[in-house]
Amino acid sequence: MSIEPFQQIFLGMKSPIYSVRFFLRNKGMLLLGTAPHILNLIIYFWIVRNIVIAKWIIPLFHSLALKWDGTFLAPLFNTVFIEIIIWIIGFLLYGIFGTAFVNAVASPIYDIIAQNAYEKTSGNKTPKQKFMDFIDSIISEVTKAVVIFCLFVLSFFVQIFAPIVFIVGIWYLGWNNIDRTLLLMNMPLRKRVLFGIRNWGLCIGLGIWCYIPIIGTLMAFSMAAAGAIVFAKFEKGKNLIKN
View 1: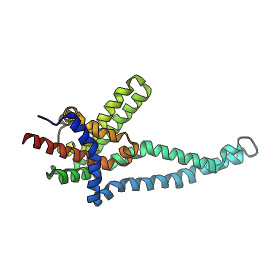
View 2: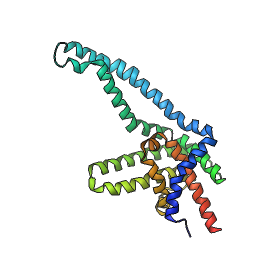
View 3: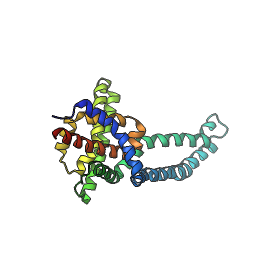
View 4: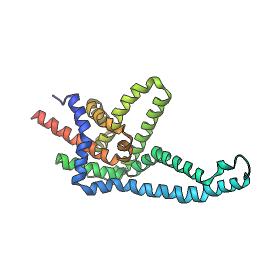
């Protein structure tokens, strides 16, 4: 006997709520999860303000404004207007690429969060991690980011596939967060994929949250904990059914 799909979906949907409780009880893990994003934001916007705008854009458009002074094109080279445009572009680019970058680089940190969440929820220990496990985690996150981007492009340009891609995307994003913990358990890729297929309800329930941009990108550390918690509770549920 196994946990019913609808029970799995409900468990998957509740797991981010459990992760909030986990972070409230483990504030050190919350600081660990937010630190990479805070540091990345500071560095990124410092570069935009002090290098891209101050050293490249403003001097360029200032010289163009002097060159076209007195013509109808002069207002287009207003530095204040250009700076506003650059900041808008900067925010958009950060939303598209910045979070994916920091999530890949900070993947080993999210592994620590997932490991801690799993162990505190299940009472079991994960296998000891080696240096190559951290490298595998980063490679795995980069690969998944590429897959997600390809799914987005496919659904955008080939509208007939959009509904299918949408459903597969929800499953994939949910499995992606659970897979972090499965990887910590040293499961081979084949078993990890089979787990996601056989327990699609867990992936769908968790994946729905990932379609909320702020949660799916800026709060990836929270979803790492949610994936660990949902797997731990799934294991407990299976043991209760067996007993």
